[in-house]
Image (cartoon, rainbow, N blue to C red; front, side, top):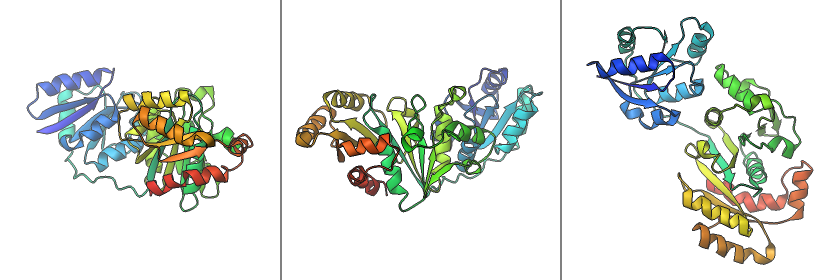
Length: 345
């Protein structure tokens, strides 16, 4: 029996397909997916996923991931929407069909697709997600320092995925375009991010966050797709913003760095994070530590968050001055974060 998953849709094709599958002896409906990772997690029990062109996160990168996991992908589009059909075809769908087909016809078509043997994706790169509590604990500055250090030995991308308050372009004094929204648009069109002329500083490629109001609808899961595609063959450091908003990135990360400010408010916020955290345990970094109170602050965050900071970064005026002036990260910050690079390699 063919095991089929659908991507939930408000269009009529999905409800018709679900109803017909329940009455079919040849097809078993195993999942109606609301999020892309639901399909990937259950790949061993799915032969075919059927997705409509109206779903924005069914990108070429997502289709390729499902296919590497052994799932055939069927794209559905409105009869009159030829551009939608072309996007699905360019995105690598195994079969592209119109959405007003009778469910029995659709089943006949998809039964002709032989399930393919799964090949788990191999990735030579590394995806590092930097997040932290609300306020200004120093997420962007630490992410920039980590990317700077990684770029000393390999091709590295610094990706600003803070959709609410992107700051990387301002931090490094770079033009705001091309930005992450341009990369998402390229992915939706079936193009690689390499086709966009991104800004580079030596071996560090920078993808700024979208400051344009017209890009305000950029979806976090689409940015996750971009990050995963880039991380196949290089190191990608993501400035993901506050930790609740960064949840889309956390599950796909190879390592997670959580920045906490060494202040009473920062420690309270870190303890709230620790209580509500879902996902792999993050590496805790205590930032802006007063030199005379380092031991006290380390004891406090251990007590209230239950986490032991892997690195402490002293509060120094020179670090802030380098950030304001758009200069490379100050050497004291680079020294303090070097251990994080060792942990990620």
